[in-house]
Length: 443
Image 1: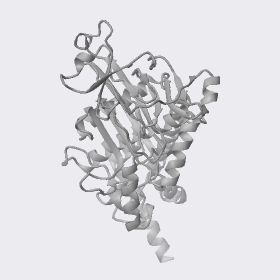
Image 2: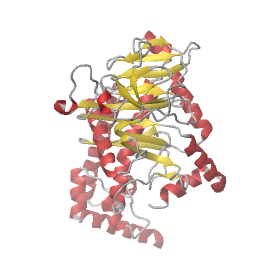
Image 3: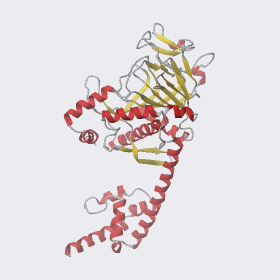
Image 4: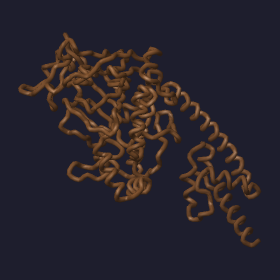
């Protein structure tokens, strides 16, 4: 009985303390996040750590709660319930507009619904096109330095040029998807494109890129295999300013994680089911952990830190382990070794920001177009385009003119990262333990 009396006395004093704390009572009236204020009383493990815990404590010990605190808490939890309902409604609106919860359709079904045109096209011998050859659109040959090896595309009349407003899926004579291009998947929410582009721009300015010999910026995020001279599986650590406070680093990481996971949840239902399911199966077989950030080893959920308030999709599937953000990136002819049959990307911006500088007259192109060499296809770049491709075949991007801005996100499945993961797993012995160690070690 004495123990219970002591606990009741302590709780009563605690509630009085809260009621007399001006900043805490102001936070209640404003419907603000209480958790930071509650942590001010962290010396006693029996007291509330979160607003949910406080709600439980006050409900169980109502007789000990001062009237002013009881009234303020009632109003606060009403405000919070309304805010949660509003956030839930906003998330449903986004999910519906982007089709985030839709089931992927096969290439045939997408064609039947009019979402894309289906074209049968087989690959041809590409041995005459050497790796490292620059790609340039016909009419843009002035962009190539004298003496550089370059291929002007389309090379001849046998090539196919996908126009900026054209959605198309190329399949081979056996019915397998070779290349998919679908436009305007986010057309109902241009504000989301604006937000995604702002985060990409932030990443380009804050982080060191990969492939420094290529044109433009390519920023990796998620898990990687470390530098070429010291392959070690771990989280990307590419923020240029190493003196940033941990909270600021985590905020930047959270925003990057958010747009890449949004990209993944848009790409999967938008692209042909043959593509999405093949990638998911390869991911399951590889066993790599989903994308993560330092200080957070959870394997689901992401937040969009939108201008009108953050939205947390707490149960959504995370992006795969490896993602990229790009700005004005262009690559010569090359191939990539993946453990999945496809890579995916989302072009979020293609804009002529300076018409005078770009000098788009005559037959010139803005450039920055994707080229599948053996398929003999040029995909003209356009804002809000989702694509899947087979990087094991020769491909690249055409040089772009000055005054043009291009941005996007990409999901990849690099074989060398899987190899580094397997080597690390052999040492650690368990994926979860390894993820927790690597994600939390510098918390």
